[in-house]
Image 1: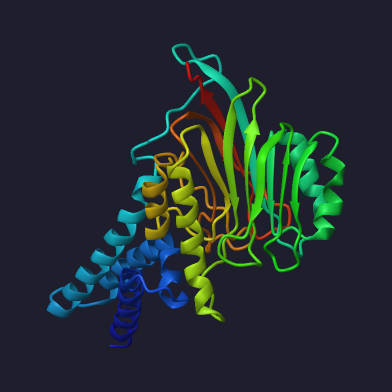
Image 2: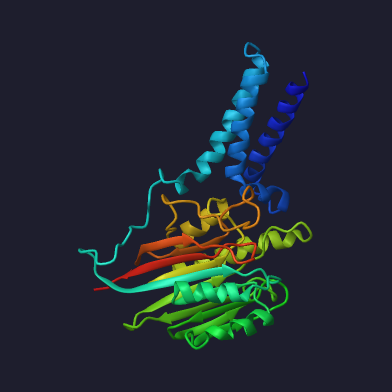
Length: 330
C-alpha cells in the first residue's frame, strides 16, 4: 500500500512538471522544467521499473500509472532526441585536408562562464594557452577577472571589455581585429551584449553576437521574460545579415526549449550539436543536474571541425570549444 502511494505521488509530480512548460508562462516555476528533460526521462524509467516490481500487475490502476509514466518519458525523450547520436545532423563535418570543399579560414572559439566568484584564473589561462582559440568569450567577468586575464593580451590584442559586479560582465579577446564593434544593452541597462565584425586573415568579415541574458528568476518575474526578448531581438538582427554569422555565450536556456527553437527558426542559424550530443555545460559540480546552457550557433556558411566540452576549472560551468570551417564564397 505504501509503495502504491509513493509511486502514485511521484508519477503525479512527474506529470505536472512535464505539462508545466506547455503553458509557456514566463514564470520560473514553469520555465524551470524545460531544463531537466533528460533527468525527468530517467525518473520516468525508474517509476516504470518500480511499478512493475511493486504494484499489482492485474490492476487497471497500475496500468493507468504505467501509461502516464510512458507518456511522460516519451515526451521528454522527444525533446532531447535530436541531440543524440541518432538525431539528424544539420551541420556537415569538415576534416582537415578534405577534398571537394573550398574553405577560406578556420575559426576556433572558446566560450566560458567563469563564475564571477571563482578565483582559478590560472586554470583558465592555462586552458587558453593549451587550446589556442582564436576568440575567447568570457562571461560573468568582473574587474578582478579582467586584471587576471591581462596575461593573454600579448596574444589576444583585440579586446572588448565590459566588466561588471552583477554576474553579467563580459570580455571578448581575439587574435583578429574587430570592426563595427558595439556593446549594447538590448533589454536592460545592467545586461550587456557584444556585437562586432571579426576580420579574418583573408579579409572576410564574420558577424558575431555574444550574449548572456538573464535566467528565469524566482525573485523578479520580469527577468524571466527578458531572456526571451533578448534572444528574439538578436534573432531579428541575424535574420537580416547576409554574411557569416555566429551567436554565442551563456544563453541561460537549454538547446531544446521552445524559446531556443524559436530563436533558431527566426535567426536561420544552425546548431552543430544536433545529431552529435547534448554537451551539457552546467552544472559542473553536480553530475545529476546538468544541461546545455552555453551555446554556439552559426549560419550555413560554416562546417564543423570540432566541438568539445573542456574540463572544469572551478566554475559552475564547463567551457565549450568549437572550431568551424568557413566555406569559400566563390
